[in-house]
Image 1 (cartoon, rainbow, N blue to C red):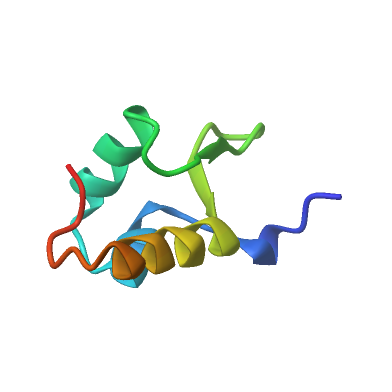
Image 2 (image 1 turned 60 degrees about the vertical axis):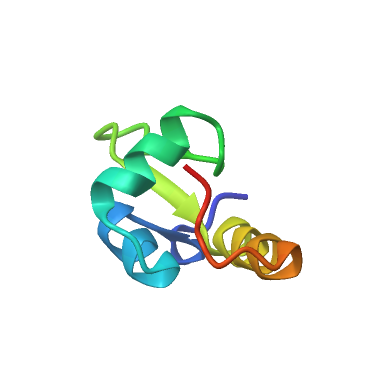
Length: 68
């Protein structure tokens, strides 16, 4: 069941990952992070768990830069 509290919009996702909103949009378009669309308005929605997993993967790789 979809619980909206489990999701954030682009601006909050950008804040969580420490990048710009345009970077979040680019990563979503390129499949680097999973994105869902709100069926009512088409807004991008990102699951908090997916963002946390992405951060852990970046930290585990030892990369100081976020992937492009």
